[in-house]
View (cartoon, rainbow, N blue to C red):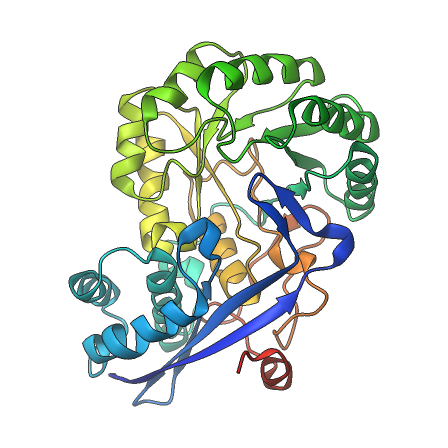
Length: 371
């Protein structure tokens, strides 16, 4: 089997205004993605998805389309799509960085491999280690009363774990976490995510103050760049510290481990550059006595399916202790899959069909296409 062509389709979907995410970088009202179709000479087509959020990743739909059409497609056309490590190496050889764009192609190759073998992607990694992946809701950094309303909505959807966006205004951050804790009650797993907003001294003070609300973890309290900042916070607080923006690659994971800078790593299929690289980070963390969760860029259906396959097949993803952010499709007013994913009651289940197990609703794709 050979790769015949790689097709790209930019799409944009609106987020439900009630759920729009406010974090350190501002409000998030819609998302743009690039859908990837890897066509083969045997009639099997693999689906992938590029999260194009430039203020987070530096990649947008225009750069993704150009990189794929001018660099990655020429490098991969004629190659065996099931030789995935070889294909990823060829992408690295023609363009540095851009992990989300590379991930969009890589997940499409896993989709092809699963379809060709007649098994779900999680079976290509040895089969499921859990029947479903425990998930948590992300409460936007809005006024405390609005955050409380979102928490009530999430409780009604069956979520039994949440995190609250902080790092916006210190006094309001405290009141927002207080309000959400008041809604969810004692014993409910609740974390705080600062998205790298605080310098180390402020982070230590804020995390200590947030422990009054029995937070289960503090996610990325300081900016990425120097792992010693994160390590300083970890030494001076009593709750687990989670690294997110500080860890994109396996090499960054090793640096965090060597510095004793975190208790848990937040991995993404997109951020890592693919399912295999995200799994590699999880395996490194597990070998070092740490664990991982799965973070989110509010992915749509294809990438969300890839995340579920990762979570279901990887022991280094400690979803039971640190529930995953596999929730992206729930934020949007509409979707692009022919059948929605199983994301009910605070857990995610991968489709049992071959490959990623998802198909596109082509009419919806056409409706949301970016011209």
